Length: 195
Image (cartoon, rainbow, N blue to C red; front, side):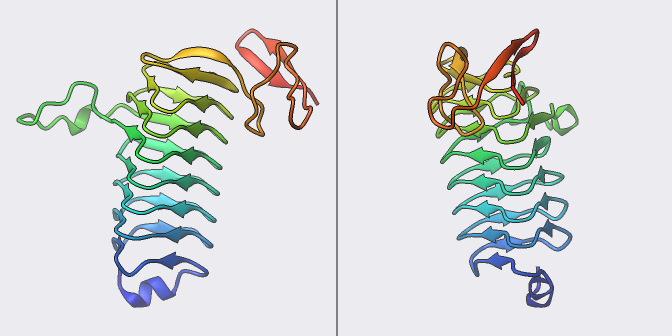
């Protein structure tokens, strides 16, 4: 992206070592740090922080207020909703059974991460899954299935450890947050916040 194009983006910071290809869309207030590469057809929302050595691939969509920590590659097929946190060195995939000698880009399996989800450091997200709203993926976890709203998962393969509040605290057995005191109730598909 030329200096003229960069200057046309209001309140956007792009470090001089980063590459933002012509045709990429970067929202107001977003910061892109050292050694990043944002591909031409990628769309990044407002007020995001893109840490050092991050790659945002073609056709990737990133919502508003996302934080992508150092050493993360967000590949084609991945969509992040608003306020998603991607921990350091976590891994997305986009081809289920890759081979170096066969181009399988027509087999990209979409991965969707819903609003407010946290993906812990060094976790791996196997392509084709959906991570629910405000879900919490523990550090080092391998996610090979859909994860529900507010679900806390850990391990390899991932298993449910409990539920988390939108504020990030683990919920007590009575589904009350020990931090902000918000209450939740069970539903057929998991839990939901009480009004």
